[in-house]
Image 1 (tube, helix red, strand yellow):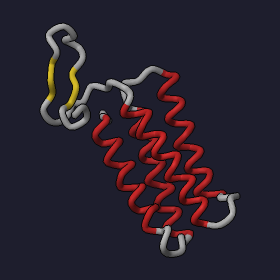
Image 2 (cartoon, one colour; image 1 turned 120 degrees about the vertical axis):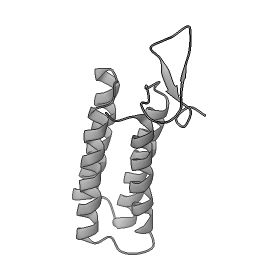
Image 3 (tube, helix red, strand yellow; image 1 turned 90 degrees about the vertical axis):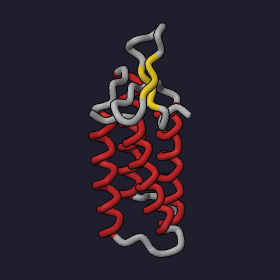
Length: 124
């Protein structure tokens, strides 16, 4: 089962790999690898215990990032990479604003809400 921590870590790794291509050309092989990582990220988001509407919103944004990466119709690779990075930052904000139970790490169980466990890593 996916959780907030793993989603955020994957987004961070993908963002760092994309940012590396701001100073050098983005090859089709590298773009395909990042595309595949975004596909895996979408699979992890599907496993999040979220309502249908917010989950669909996040999945649609990730699909948009994949489409930009694959069919970049913007002027130049740098603009395309920046657009994908911006979409990933929006996804980070959307994931961070949701209270998602985290099965990993040290969890806090609130006595008034026994079904709401929040990971200390996810909720500083």
